[in-house]
Image (cartoon, rainbow, N blue to C red; front, side, top):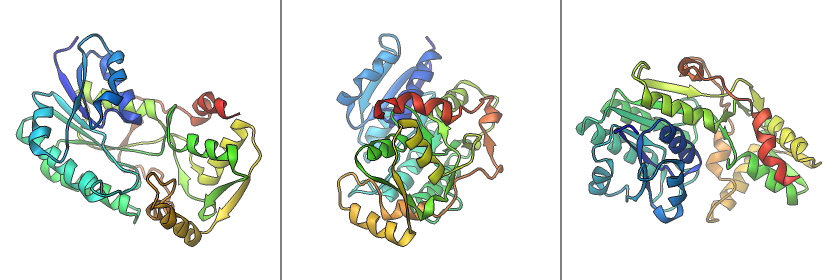
Length: 304
């Protein structure tokens, strides 16, 4: 086992558990930071006894954040929001916290700081995207040597996209193609994103900066809905929902504890989420992107 410690903020989430597994296989000691340690104790089984710890931290408390980082070799920030609720606003979670974390890492001479952003943040007008972009700028101004990773929509066993629409198709006679379903994506496998993070932690030969992580296939929202229906063997009407109607639906759903759709997410769907080839990518890290057609059917089979 290596003596280097990697601290992962938000390590209990969808991407986090794959990152933990990758780093554990490389022999790193790992400290997973989460609000609910008792719900993520299973992460310890990804490594040897004592290799992985799961720790509580209130990220709004600078003292606790400082203590959580300790003598880490690398710090990874995976914390992010899909929608805002109360104190968990885009400003607090996407902008203020990452900049504060980068500043603390810089002051403590942490060797590597890796932050997860999102693709399309420099073209979209959604509040989500703007907050992610502001976070990137804040991080770079504070810790210029940081690695900023921008994944496309991620697919994998526990993903929020393919699973959600497959589940919806089980009881709804239609699936909504927001804005006509013309928005373009390049879905990326969660394991490829996790490998990217592990490679950057474990190697010094890669330059700091922005990396866009995406798959090779460019597909539309409607294409993905058709693929889901074909995969689970269900016939459902794909309804074209104009953006104004979808925005109203999102506004109404925003009052729910965990909304399926928000007004801001509709705004984000007005912009394609595809690579512009201005940044480094999976290829620069030696990773061949997995195709969603080969992976997704394996875990959507339960919806047949």
